[in-house]
Image 1 (cartoon, one colour):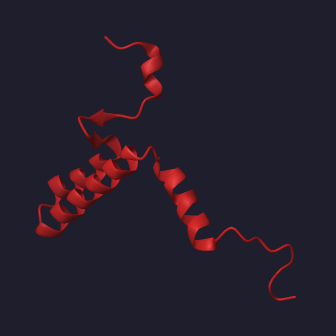
Image 2 (cartoon, one colour; image 1 turned 180 degrees about the horizontal axis):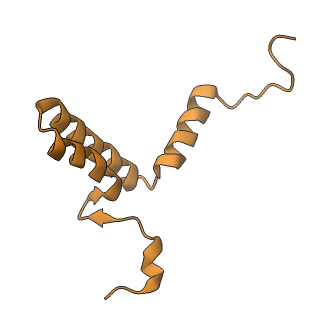
Length: 79
């Protein structure tokens, strides 16, 4: 039996993140090679993110900062 404090943890099945269940569900509903590849790639992607301690939201913020750079202008570029 789980304690109520465990309710904030991310769902996992061994090394597979709970977020990877949606592409797996897509694969089970539409069994094709491309959906299988999508499900495997999503599982690998979410597993790598979990290994480095990122959530999807945190990764997207990091990616935005990486692409945009650390330089922020104080005035718009068109002035």
